[in-house]
Image 1 (cartoon, rainbow, N blue to C red):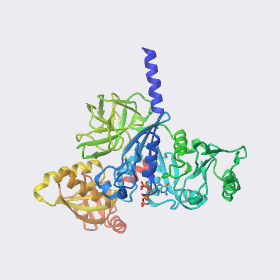
Image 2: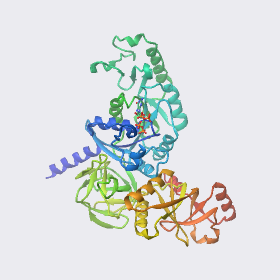
Image 3: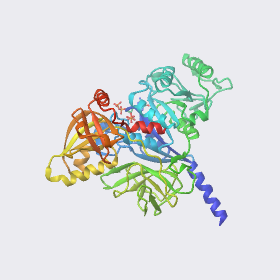
Image 4: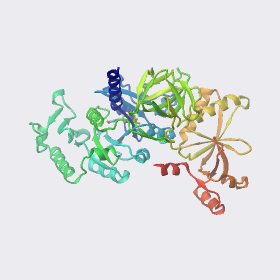
Length: 538
Ligand code: G4P
């Protein structure tokens, strides 16, 4: 009996340690969808990668779900994909890279243990990459960089590295280095595996060329006569002498990013990247809770909900809570307690993700993401635990919306579906709801404009409710620490006083100037910004 238990524990530990859960961050068009699909192909998770750009071919990336995504050819919602590769169980969490991405993206980054950052070699660091990178950095998670599109002419690799360090403030270590680019792309000099990987090979066995102890080609090859080869050796020498040292510990601490060059479209450098990534990416990491740090190898089942989404697929009219397992093992039918309410219930409906081809999950362990069917019990940030003690994981950051609109039902007779739709979409967390004090007018806040478009579209399609939205422009939202000091007379068009959905008082200032003016006039009112308190926690 004891022997059996020891065996179970050992296999549980192995299972957990084989998990690698990451998100891919990038600016639109850098190649995130293409790389994701190639990774899934290696993992055998999909047979046909489909064609990335639905706009042209009518086929869509496996990771694109919603109707609106199809219409626009972009990913709006984050999705989760799982595959197996050489003994590892890999979970990829997709994050929308569109400039109007939502809080969903930020929260998704709270559920991963590492991130892969894709950079277009011709463009370098772009705005969205920078924003997403900062969220990863705040969490101190390891970041791996894939510089893509080497089959096209891009910027000089040394310049790209310098930009990485200057703009993002992270040190880098190139695991491999391109030999040429675009039409003259010969392949990569792999510093880590000590070999050259050829881009164009007729025979698969010629793909890898070995290096000798001096780091030069150990076999005869015409590339040796090319100036590209000499340039590469010079650059490698420079990197060896003046570049950063590789350090596993610094990678794990998020201080040093391993950099890989490749071309996702032509599947070049992707496998090498995947194999090296899996070696250095961390298994599930401990998480903070109100009863201390929770180790992923602990037996008690626990985790948190980082995203809720209704009607992801028209074929499944349901609501799904995305749950990150942080410790223990999930078994279908087990009893779990929702820490917020203390209520215990059985989880019988759960799902694992592979884009819209969802399958029922019976077992999952720390590091995995499972989907729990939800009938309205869950909220974003909720902790679920199996057995005792009941505890809470630390709160997920709330991001301050910057854009606001007034919203109302077009048809006043259809208030019921209007309210139901708003309530559910707000619970999903992509938009935030505010109400004016007496008139109870609805105001929505979001991080980007696209969220409002998604809102209108989903209200119409999923809740049969036509809505009118009236833009209010960008506002600076500040919550009030000492609500008792607030007087309604402080509300004006430049500093509109509203309530959030937890009935907290919030001022929507016209701009930073109006905020400062208000603070000068009302020194006793203590205003705060949710991100500030979050940052203090990190
Ligand atoms: P995203 O998810 O990050 O937005 O990017 P996605 O994978 O959709 O790729 C964007 C475009 O870049 C696509 O071109 C895709 O084929 C191309 N691409 C991705 N990886 C590579 C690569 O390694 N080399 C080259 N040359 N192209 C790559 P597209 O379908 O033609 O769209 P578009 O360029 O007209 O927008």
